[in-house]
Length: 480
Image (cartoon, rainbow, N blue to C red; front, side):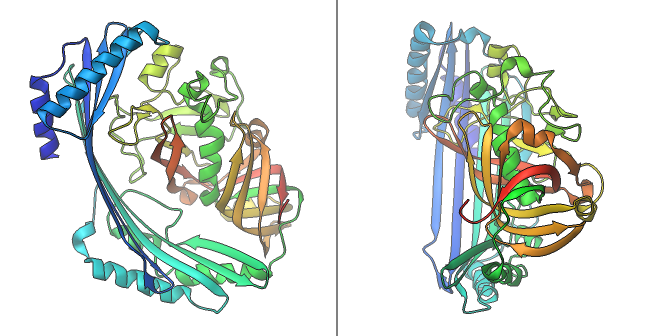
């Protein structure tokens, strides 16, 4: 961060003549270690550093990215941004005079209990070997792996209006996978934190039970081999937080992105069934559906101080008691649409412009525990851990598959079922929400591969949710 500060101070001396400019400097490092079937896989070590210059001049806005952080390199990027601003002034879809100017000064750094360097590579591999041994419990486990990944992103955003926002994000992501096979049947289970990414340091290894979780993961993969397929019929459905993450992400998060609603994503990632006129009146779900954009939950994947335009992030309801209140739109999209939004304009790297993204999108808890939800079900299925997803280009009709299911009969959990899946239409599905677990059941999770934008941008997104009960859902199994 000291180096980024020095680069920013030098740039300010030679900043371009324009109405407004921002400089976003990003330094990113990542490392990935894996042991598969007792053999160390090739490790990955990545490092990237660069800058994005944004220039607003007259009616135009332009972007210029560079990995050359010398004064000459940044000057060239600023010149390209200015040239593109002049093109946009002639041909753009909106007048850049509406671009909000942010002046915030803020700082954020992930709290870490144990740094990545507290263990040597050999010690980290020893942990992964131990997890491998704990997975290899039976000859029917034909493939098994344990991994440990780390990512650090240091970012500094400065602007001609005096904005100065620095953020350092650290995350450590461990995980396990076991694949079981017998005859023509193959089943897979994940665990050990695989679907539970958060900010933090090596303390995440103990928090998710990397080694301790391995016997359960392998045993469930084996048990699924002999389980019957999930029935194909209409049943009540309980989704655990591991699956709620994808349900929220695909059928609430993406449809509410304001740039998508405005048509920006139509050619690539699709449009949305949500229209501007729905906000403030549309019933998205039942009265139990409360969804927030929330930068305040500790250790959720997206840092909570500001977005990549420098707008300060604050907690806000997107859906309250089932009614749609506001979109996931950053300050520029808000100005274009005339709608309130949130500080959610983010970029995946220094060589991408910021666009509307989800940030931390959470379903607020209700009351009671998982057993209370199960007790309300006469005939249903409980599903755990996402395996597959499909949703149409308006983010409305969807189909999801999960790794593991359990039948529910007369308020009690029964046996396992394999290959469980369910399908629905967003509004009908969320309006069937009839139970939301309490605060004690809330799990802070997320995804690390949310794709959007052209050219593509893959970003981290945080999601928190309790288990939820839905009534009368179309469930299926096998190859349905």
